[in-house]
Image (cartoon, rainbow, N blue to C red):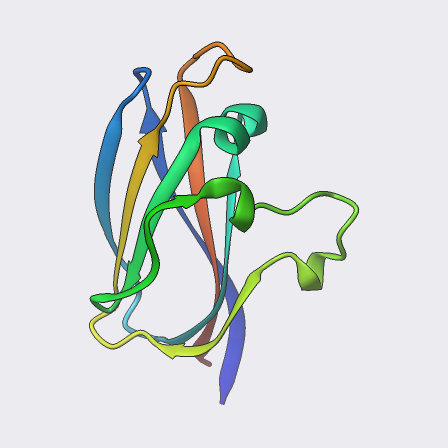
Length: 125
């Protein structure tokens, strides 16, 4: 039997224009990823400055320079509808790779911020 769970992975952006790539390993009991969501402790910086690439099990789901604002959700959206729907992606080796770039933008001034990648998953109960 499969049970729905949410997983969170964080990276810290500490410099304007910084590019950072980080690999995360999921629990072996996680079998599929149904959706993704990006958030930040400074949403305006993520929205205006952020781009990324996301890979699950070595398969690219969002290419380099994919705009973060396309993977964000507002509070006016039902919690069950906030995730970008991927269907049911097999986690395979359980490796998630997030490559994130902060792109300077005149609409915001830089401050260090956290980027959080949330995954809507199914795990063996």
